[in-house]
Amino acid sequence: MTEAPLWRRLLAEFLGSAFLAAVVIGSGIAAQRLSPGNTGLELFENAAATAAGLFAIILMFGGVSGAHFNPVVSFVDAAFGGLSWRDAAAYLPAQVAGCIGGAVVANVMFSEAAVSISTHDRASGPHFLSEVVATLGLLLVIFALARTDRSRHTPAAVAAYIGAAYFFTSSTSFANPAITVGRMFSNTFAGIAPGSVPLFIGAQVVGGVVAVVVVKILYPGITADDAADAVFPYHHLSPETPDVVSHDDASAAVSDTSGDAPVPAGAEPNLPAPGVA
Image (cartoon, rainbow, N blue to C red; front, side, top):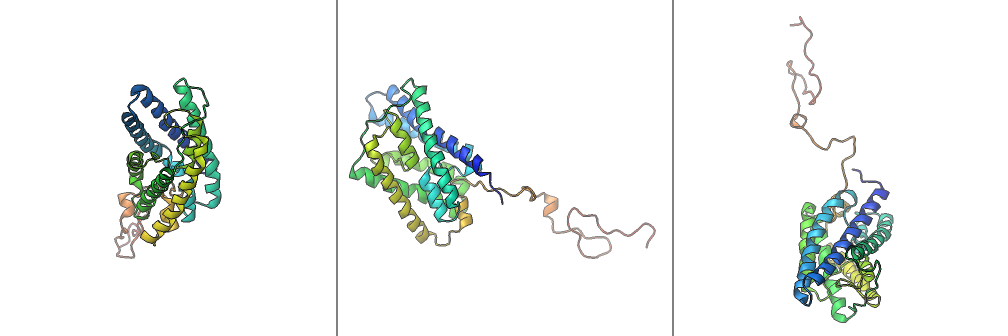
């Protein structure tokens, strides 16, 4: 099994994180302009766009890097052996830089200042609990599917969970330290004041630690191979190993006419020479 070189995976994490931030912040700005004064509708529009965008972004980049876009996901994956600690540490700055870049792009797309520090205060006890719960739930979705060989369903499941968590948590489910930092740089609907960021990130780390414990209790047999498929499978067969086995290759063997031992598929059978009875 092989994986893409680290630089390519870091690029995928950077771009995916940038797209994610652009979707979250851009749809928030659009919602404010389309439905001014109607907070419930604004949140619904923001949540729907985020869920749909997240589904597509995971499919776009998952085959390269696993589509983490989230330092907590990467470090929990490392805790289970699916990703090396070195690679998880390398993913972190790519994810944070991508989310900051995506925030800037979203601002500019809507004729806002490229960088505007948010004044949206979100620091409170209920918000802290919400982020613990939101992060825990996200990780349970990801690693439960990985453990049960259903990672192909993760893009849809994660998108559905995040869309729902916009409404069942008072924090609107950031559940991601990188996007939390990125959203500081947009003083719009989806922004967060710098003073609220440490509380959110602390809650997300707590949620990650709790998730490791809960996953180990629920799925004690989880292996490094299971964890390697977290979010989206990105480990591929090596070039020497064919990705697709043909029907002929899958057959057990081809017997020769003399009744000798079976001949492997694709090899020439040991036929008698011409004129030999």
